Amino acid sequence: MVLNKVDLLGEPPALGIDDPRMRATFRVSCATGEGIEALKLALFELVEPAPLPATADEEGLVEFLVYRPRSGRPAYRILRTDRGFRVTGTPPEGEELEAALRAAGARTGDEVELGDEVLELR
Image (cartoon, rainbow, N blue to C red; front, side):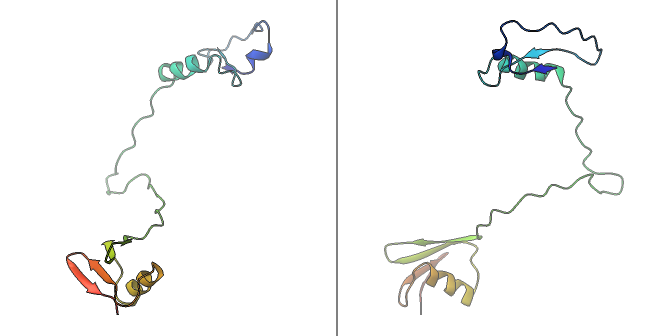
């Protein structure tokens, strides 16, 4: 049991509660931080670790799926160099790459480094 706002009381109240489910009582103040450290340390002792989920059942199906949002960043980057531009990562091809280079400020005649190749933008 966690009792908050103990900073507002002069003397902590007596609790006449006898319940076998209560393993400990903590008096804390979220405003001043009093008792928070003791509560955090006790959680490691009082809370039993959750069992690890099974990775797959007999049919090879996992019990749950984890979805992670994609970063929204493209799989490539266009960097400005002293002679033009360098494309790193996995760039798109054709017109899509040309449009991305133009959006980054590339002009006709600029050098574009794609991996080991150096091309001239037309």
